[in-house]
Amino acid sequence: MKRLLNTLFVTTQGAWLARERENVLVRVEQETRLRLPIHNLGSIVGFGQVSASAPLMGLCAERGVPISFFTEQGRFLARVEGPVSGNVLLRRQQHRQSENAVRAAPLAATLVAAKIVNSRFVLQRALREYRNEQGSESLKEVIDHLGSLLRQVRGEGIGLDSIRGYEGIAAKRYFEAFPQLVRREEAAFQFTGRTRRPPRDPVNAILSFLYTLLRHDIAAALEGVGLDPAMGFLHRDRPGRPALALDIMEELRAPLADRLAVSLINRGQVRPSGFVTTESGAVNMDEGTRKKILVAWQERKRETIRHPYLEETVEIGLIPHLQARLLAAYLRGDLDAYPAFIWR
Image (cartoon, rainbow, N blue to C red):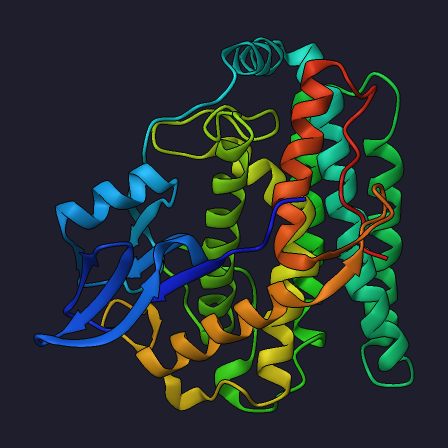
C-alpha cells in the first residue's frame, strides 16, 4: 500500500527553496531554516511570496514530488511536476465516459449521494450532541430533507442536469444548518452562509483554505494513478479547473474538511484576532493562524479509520489515493460501480 509521505507547507514570506544534493532546503534571508531529504516528501506547497530554484524543481520532477504555488489566501497559481506516466488507455476511457452525459450520470449520482450521506452524518452527530438545545428541530428538518434528496438522487434514470440540481440544493440546505455546528459565541465566528472568492468571514476563510488543501491532495492522487484531474463527470469542464478533483471532493468535504474546521473553532484553536478584513470585505487569515490550520490538517491526515469498502485500517491522508485507485479500477471495468467513500 502507498506510504503516506509528508507534504512540506511553506508559509514564511520571502522563503527560498533550494537543492543540496538529495535534500530540500528552506532558506529565509540567507539562513537555512529547514533541511529535509527528498525521499521523505510527497509534495511541496508554497503560499504567497515563496520561490524555488531551478535545480530543486529538477530534483522534484525526477523524484515525482510536485511543487504547487498558491496565494496567501489559498488561490491556486501554478504546479510544477515531472512527466505524467499515466496509462493513455485509462485516460481515453475516462474522456469517453465524461463526454457522454448518459454514461457520466451514474457516477455523478454516486458522488452526490455520498456527499449527502456524509453531510447528513456530520449534522446527525451534532444533533445527538445538542438534541435538547434550541435549534435542534430545524437541524432535524434539514437532515430529513437531505434524506429525501438522497432518495431522489438514487432514483432510476436520473439525468445529469437533475443530479447537479440536487447537489446544489443539498449544499444550500447543509450550509443553512452549519451555524448550529459552530459553538463559539464571538461575533467573528457567526456563520450566515457560504461565501467564496473572497470569503467574507473567518468561518468561510477556514473552509476555503481547507478545501484548497483537500483539492491539492486529491489532484495529486488522481495524477498518481494516471487519471486526468481536469476531466470530470459531475462538474463541468472549464479551463484551469480540476473538475475531477472537485468531483471527488464532494464525497470528502464534510468528513475531512468541515469537521476539522468546526473542531478548530469550537476548541479555541483559532481566534478572531487571527483574521483581517480588507477594504474590499474579504477576510484573510494571518500567518500564525494559517500555520495552526496546516499543523492540524497534517495531524488529521495521520489519524486512522477503517475504510468502508476495502475493510482495512488506513491513515485518513491516504483516502484520496485509495479513492483514486478505486475510480481507476471502475473506469477500466474492473469494478461494476465506483465505491464512494462513506464515513461511518
